[in-house]
Image (cartoon, rainbow, N blue to C red):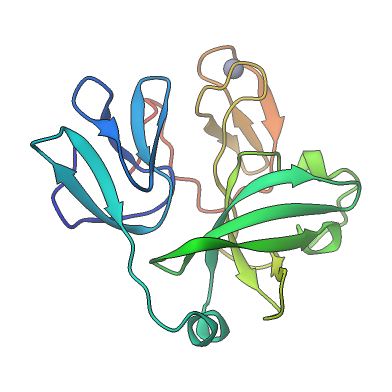
Length: 191
Ligand SMILES: [Zn+2]
């Protein structure tokens, strides 16, 4: 468990379900309570709930200046992905904004199949390249890409195997990804 007021990024481990139930801006996955959004963590000791308190300012202004945003891949189409953007740099936005990621913007090199780079429920760090809706996103750039991913077979949080593959510590399934600053370590914790 972190400290009151700590800044969280999506996917960050806040505690286990025996300690806290997921409140606002949090979710539970396999007994672990994690941050769903960018914000500040507030542990409600009386109700034993963890909540993420959003911070808001002028959204359009923030987006224009944003070096990166955080989002969750909600679905894949033939040549683009739909992304729910819920964080602008380290600030949480609510409601989330729909983002659009074209296959040509996934990597520097040509990507034949979107599933080789991203999959639904992945958390990505992306850069906005237009400011109309849906927000156009790119993963072309240093420090951009998938930051959290779950195994397509068993749902376990995956760890980095090499620069282009993630591995499931539970079932050993290996999947390709456009990997960004991936922070999940071998024991499933984040640093
Ligand atoms: Zn697995």
